[in-house]
Every structure is written in structure tokens, then in C-alpha cells.
Image 1 (cartoon, rainbow, N blue to C red):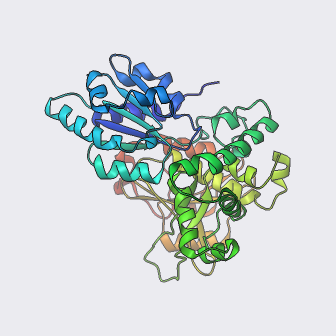
Image 2: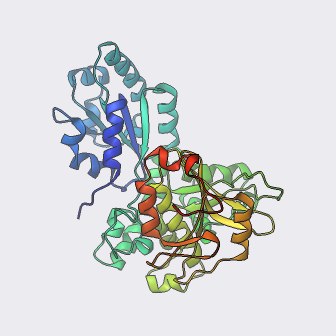
Image 3: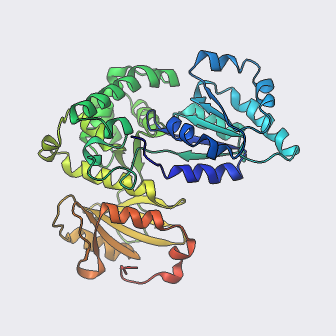
Length: 408
């Protein structure tokens, strides 16, 4: 089964504006499938030229990269696994500048890559102003088939669409092993696979917790700088999200450390050895697994330039997700896995602190109904749908702001 991805339209829009577009995402997330399925649509003209830079035959074509690209004229050139040849960025810069002087259209190069530190560094240093970065995440709640087990299996297509749960967990186990033993070493960092697996598993046990770097370093018996490098690596590979604290002008002592989430819930369950949905529902991580699943799905569909954070004081007053939407609109979102969510006292106090324009509880049920004090209870799917449709900046304009916690 091949599913439609919303990112296709974004890639098209960016190719019309920028000479190069870089589609980044973890391995096996569907980048190659997307561009091959829509190759004709993306090119807007002659069939694109596709090169897989992990294929030795395709790589040989680029021994004279400048000459090869010049022969493509106005064809869209798709370079897959471009992080393998970071030296190409300098060549692309010269060609893009030459095309600009010649008055050629934008959208000449589409780069696909596993988001590595080297890739991002090379592109930012040599293609600044010439390239746009887009992220392709695992499947979200608006893309996945209904009742497909998205929370339990995660959003990687081969895991989600596996014929049964055993095949799904087997795929995730192999994905983790391959990343640790082959992909990460090929991207540059020389970290023992056993050490990085242990660290990744520790993050799974502490899913959604405020990050304690010192404790992590002690548990792994490494330095603070070393454990900071581990986290940076997994964040840069788009496998882990570092959610910053919200800085509000309130007279409260606020938590300053970030929360850390493994971005795909299926990987959380695989790292912890949870082999079925039944086992997950009885596991201590179940609540934080659901929180991370909801948070990640909402951030995947939120409008561009949205800012995400969490609010927490040292006394435990907390909001799971604070979204600052384009136009200055502030949403406060509490996440509950139950089908009968309650308004916690800490959530009420936090709303009084930051006074958001809208307050919601995203829960595990399907109904939608108002709660006390202007708070709405809403399903993950409905909340994601609202964010995905929120494209006009006028919708989020301060003109539409009401208080307290008004519903639109």
C-alpha cells in the first residue's frame, strides 16, 4: 500500500521558488517513494534524472559532476542519499549561480538525505539563500489508515503497514540495529553501538521527562560533553525531539531544562521490548508514550513557523504543549490518554499564568465537548485536522484573540 503524503504539495511549492530543495528525514520514512511516485509532477517538464548516491554505478556518473549536471540542461536532478557526497554542495553552488545568471527557472535540484550533521552544515555553509530544507516525518494521524495501530506501531510505513504485529516489531528491531551498526557510523560519529543503544533505551524509559544530562552521564559512565553529543546526534538525525521550556513573563520559578521525546512511538516500544498493544497498556511508559505520540503528530501538521514548548514551574504547575502559531495566537494543550479526562489543578493554574487564546485537552476518545472554564476536550484526529487547515495568517491574527481561552 502506498499512501499519499501531504509533503508532496510542499515540495512542489518550494521547487517553484528555490533552485535546490533538500528533503530530509530518517531512513525508511518514504522520501524515495514520494519522489519516484510523483516524479513527473515534481519535474514539471521532462522526466527528472534520478541518482542514488549509494549505488556505485550512479556515483561514477558524478566523477565529473559539473559536466554531468550541465548535460541535464533544464531537467530536474534528484540526488538520493546526498549526505554520502558532501563535496557536491560546492559544485551545486556554482551551477545554481550560473543558472541564475542565465535566467533559468528555479527547482533544478531535489536532494534527499538522512538528516546528518554534515549534511546540514554543508548545505548551510555553501548553499545559503539557494536551498530550502523540508522535513518528511513518519506517517501521522491524518495520513495513516484508520485503526491501523499508529500509536502502537509508529509511523514508519514498513512498520505501520506490516501484515501483523510480529512483523512490525521485527522491522523496528532491525531498523534500530541497522541505524546503530551501519548508518550512524557511515554518517561520521564513531560511537560504540552498544553504548548508543543503551543511551537510546534510557531515553525511551524517560520518554517525555525533563532532561537530566548529569544523571545520564553518570549512568553511562561518560562525561557530560559526551552525553550531550549523543543527544545532539539523535536530534540531528530527526529521531529525538528536544522540546524547550516556555519562557513566560510570570513571577514563578520555571523549569529551564528541555523535555526529550523519541519522536516515533513505535521505536519507543521496540527499545523497551514491548511486543503488543496489550503489553503497552500495562506498562509504566504508557502515559508518556501517548503524550509523545500526540505531541509529535500535532507538530507534524502545525503551520510553518509555529513554535512549540512546554510550561512547567518548580512546583509542578504544567502545560504539556504550548503552541505559538503564526500571527501571535497562543494555544495551550494538555494531553491525556484516558477517555474521561479531568481538569487538573496544575493545568488550571498554568492557564492563569500564561493566559492562552485557546486551551484544549487532547485525549484518547473520539467525541468533542466543552469543559469548564472555556477548555475544550478534543480527539487527536480533530486537533490535527484543525492545525493542518490553519494555513491563513489572518486566522491567527491578534484581531481574533479572545480571553480567557476562547474557542474559535
